[in-house]
Structure formats: structure tokens, C-alpha cells
Length: 131
Picture (cartoon, rainbow, N blue to C red):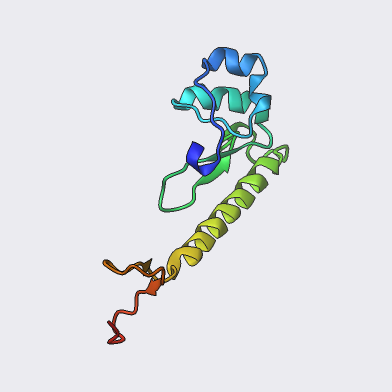
């Protein structure tokens, strides 16, 4: 990740990291286990948090509070987390689509001829009958 310009730190113990407020110094947090990350996440962002499952062929997001059956149909549920989950799913879908579009037609392969002492750049012209 350093080659991509990302600064990564850790590992940190889950209990002390979240309890001390150290998490506020980071843009993102990766937990190795579901419970290590989800419990403190729900405590901090229950009403507006979004749960995202990465690595699936389909986009999967959900509100941090889950189904909330205990308040369903009572008219007291807040839609903030659900709205954020829908917006996140749309953003992720668009980002995946744009990424595919960007890499669909890469540039032509460029190379130098072997045993050619010149500094001329050759373009791959396969199928055009050029040597």
C-alpha cells in the first residue's frame, strides 16, 4: 500500500483503540474480526452508520442498526442510516462502473525493438502488416 501512497498504521488492540478515542485520527479502520469492528462501530454510529460488505460481485450495504424489528411499524424509526446505506450503495455501484470504463480500452502496448540502438519508440501495430 505504501507504493500506492497510502499511509497504514497498526495493528492496535481493539479495546484500547476505540475506548481511548484514537480512532478519530484515522480516515478508515480495518478490523480483522467482525465483532472487533462492528460492536464499537454500532456504539459510535448507530443512527447514521452504514455496514458495507466488500469483495462481493453485488453491492451490499445495510443500516448499522439492522432490521430494527422492535420499532417496526410504530412510526418512531429514523431513516438516516437507511438513506445513507442507499446513497453508499449508489456511490459504490457508480465507482465500480466508472472503474470498468476507465480500464476497458487501455493504451496500445509500447516497446523498444531488440537490437535497435536508436531511441525510437515503436508502437505495437499487429495486424497492419508492418515490420
